[in-house]
Image (cartoon, rainbow over all chains, first blue to last red; front, side, top):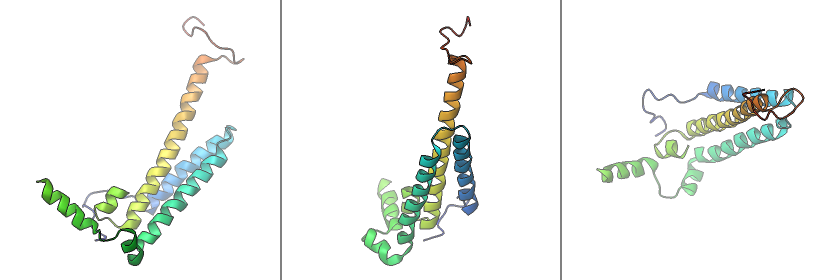
Length: 87
Length: 58
């Protein structure tokens, strides 16, 4: 597990994350420029999204916590079981 | 993200993917709302903010 991505599937790198952050910054700049009163909520929402997703992801990286969060579930075996019973 | 994790992709990759999805949704929704409102404002009101009752004759 870990590098089981299908060849040819494009997964965004950290450059892609930076580009999406630039898109959000563009929106925030536009909201600020037009005095929409959206700048603060927009920035708070984007910061919260980033913090929450990283907060979910980092514990999942640690094997001990991973087993605590997903007891007795090996995702690859589950997918294999589903695909074998589906036929 | 859930689908990627269930499919056996690395957690950090799935999280990264989800962050990109969330940020693009946020920016796209905000930009679309702004553009739509500006276009509607332009077609419905004149420069003195008066309502144009019939856009065909005015």
